[in-house]
Structures are given as C-alpha cells and as structure tokens.
Length: 399
Image (cartoon, rainbow, N blue to C red; front, side, top):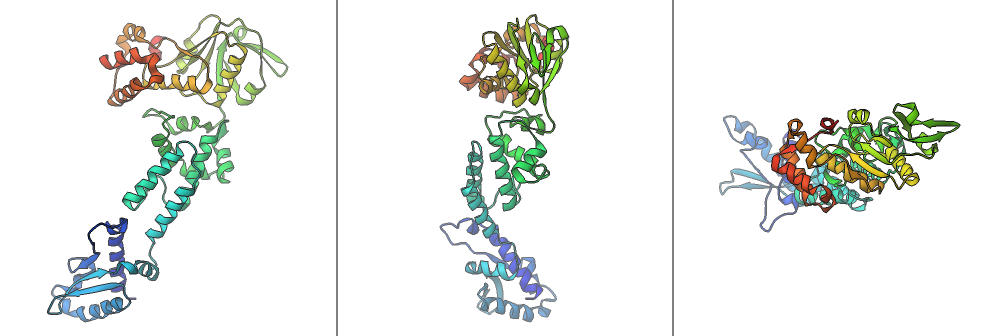
C-alpha cells in the first residue's frame, strides 16, 4: 500500500472514530467522507493536479475493489469525494496496523463491568461506564489504557479495605507485587477518591499524604502524640506522663502493647493543630494531637483509652470552619466515642472576631452543604452565624 492510500485510510478511520456514528449512530444516516478540501486529497486540485490524478485514481480503484471505500464522481466522471465503507473498518484497521479504538473500548467496558466494586468504587465504575457510552472514550486523566485501569481498580478496592496502618511501599508490594508500582498511579488514584469517595471530605490544599492517611496508607510510620494525666506500662517500664511533664510519642506497636494504669483524669481532649496541642494545658486531662483526620494509630489509642475510662468527658478542639466540623464528625463516626466540641461555637467567634478570616466561595459552598446535613446539627447555629458574617476561625486564635 502506497503512502497516498495509507494516509487516506488513516484520515477516514480517524474521522470515523471522532464521529457520532462511531458512538452509536443516529436516526439519520451519517457518512464518513473526505473531499478535495482535505489534505489527503488536495493533489486533485491546483496547478499540478494533472501529475497525480491518474495515479490517485488507480489507488482509489484498488481500495474500492477491496471494499474499503466508495468513490463519488459527478456526471462528467470528475472526482468529488471518497466515502468510508463502515463495514470495512476492522479490516482497514488490521491492514494499516492502526490502534483499534473499538477493541480498546470493549476491553475497558468488560474490565469495568467485571471488576470488584467496594464502596465508592461502584460509583466510579458506574460513572465511567456512562462516560464511555456517551463519549466513545474514557477519562484519560484517570487511566491511560486497559492495563492501567486494572491496576487502579485493584488499588482502589484495596484502599477501601485497608483497616490497619501500612507504609506506601508495603501497600504497593501487597496489592501490586512491586514496591514502586503504587507510586506510578498514586496521583490518578487520589484524583478519583477526591471525586467519588464522599465519606472522605478534603480541603482544597490537602496534600496527597493527607488523603492517603484517610485510608491508613502512610509514607512513614506515624505516631500518636499524647500528654497529660495518663499512666501506662510498656514492657517492664511504667510511664507517668503527668510526672514526666512532656508530651510522649507512641507508635502503632507501642500502643498495641501498652497497658493502661489507673488515672485521675476527668477528660480527654483531641486537638487538631500542633501549636494548640503544645499550648493547651488543662488539669486532670489527657491531650492527644489529632493532626486533622485521625489515622489508625490514633484511633487505636483513643479506643483503648475509652475502653479503660469510658466515664470521663471526651472533647474535640478544632478549627471553626467546614474542615474542622468534618474532622469532628469523622472522629465521632470512626471511633464511636461520644466526643463533644470544645471552644468551637459562636462565643469564640464573637470574642475573637478580630482574628477571624473571611469565608471563600469554597468555604460557603461546603458550609451550605453541612448545614443541610443532620449529622452536623450540633454546629447548626454556629454555621448560620458564620454564613451571616462570612467568617471562620483557626484554633490558634483561641490559645
């Protein structure tokens, strides 16, 4: 096949792939056609057309005899256009060794339909199947081809089921059999979870590590930072944090092994911001640094303390903004501990009004959504006040 015939067929197939006909057709017949206005047939017109007409006609005749095209001419047998024979598309793709988009799409649809669908993954799969049906394509920002789709679906389903803290490299080995494979798709995976996992509400400026921590996937081992009136035995050592007078860092393994000892604490306070954690000192209290959404390590410590001291007061101190409210709600649901908000009301907004920041449009949108959600009824009045005055307050202003 010469260059003229090859470029002509490639142009027709490309036009076919981009046509409504390839996306399922329509009630009226559509044709895929090239004319002398198209580059591939431009040698039929112009000053030097006579040099190419005979050879072009000969090549078009060969393609028409193969059943690939229909050649259209006027009553004087003058060339007008070339029309693609739709039924010959598979044969043309094979002979020209072109990428078979139809085959790729069939494969993508099959993978999506037969995939495991844990939690929000079902929403992602449903949306992508709908997109393929309507657009004869898929979101290249989510996966580049079928192979990457298989990998991403494996990762998404595994993330949902990851109930213990794991380092990224170990997660990658466990799910994909390669310590670096997860890193290759991580940005795409995070884009998907941000859009489809409605249980994971994130801020605009949240880093990838913050998002992954919501699924207990961490770059490095994490620790729970705790201070106050708490005593425990760890191996053969007894640690009295109140006498120690400093904060103490506990790893996952340490929390599993520590044995809580009797304490006179009357309340436990989780704190969202590190600066506030260091500054907060309340008698007979245990204070734990939450650092935004808590992870498995902190959840394990909280549950262990609650099991030992269920009759004390449990409080959460966070930012007075949509993110702070979501973190509080996530804390309640994930730990099943009856936390109450601490210094997160209208009074704090009024007394620290000079330190408040104006709401962005994104803030207003999120607060509007939370206002309609019964899960956030404890913040109903403060949300109303915030929207009316267009303010929010970071907890550092309350130290």
